[in-house]
Length: 280
Image (tube, rainbow, N blue to C red):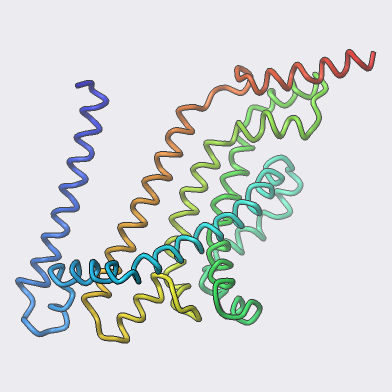
């Protein structure tokens, strides 16, 4: 077994040990130490897990989970469409960065949930305000990481491309975007975590599906075992999503090569030369 594999196995074992200790502590507090019949005793894992399995067996659990993930992906897509181009523009223009810096920091510090009344007034109830709140939460990590990635680029790459006749679009496609992929992957991971935290309370207002709605519904039906099971489900799904995003970011960093050595940049360097030669 290689050192890398051994280290990975050790990390997994320690992670599972920590989770197992948390479950044991949860069981001790709610099932052993809690007085039978009290509110605390209703949140025991011996009741939450069967209730969660029952919810999925009925099909309601799958429906709520799918709806929440769909809203999450829609909000992330909107945030990416807005955040990436705007972040690249801010990163490439010092004047734009100075003009928008204070405004962006001000807006970024406003809690996404503070926009809830405005979203409901403008968009009504249903999926639209939930997706809007997710997008508001996710756009800032994407925008700021895109701008940081552009700032981190070696300006020599752009000067070389410009000296060979590459247009701004060609520079963007072959130097800027490949050069900031690692930053974008990190920004998307942070945005995903922030959006997952926001979407659950956002679904507690004006919708009739989703994990946030399911929690309120379980509370109203006094199904505290189901409520606790849903909390566990939200944490588990969030953990899986973050793990996938983390792996994607790590793979992006490993595949990252110096732009001047990559085939993409070589193609950009060759294309303008051919064009210029043709003009001569």
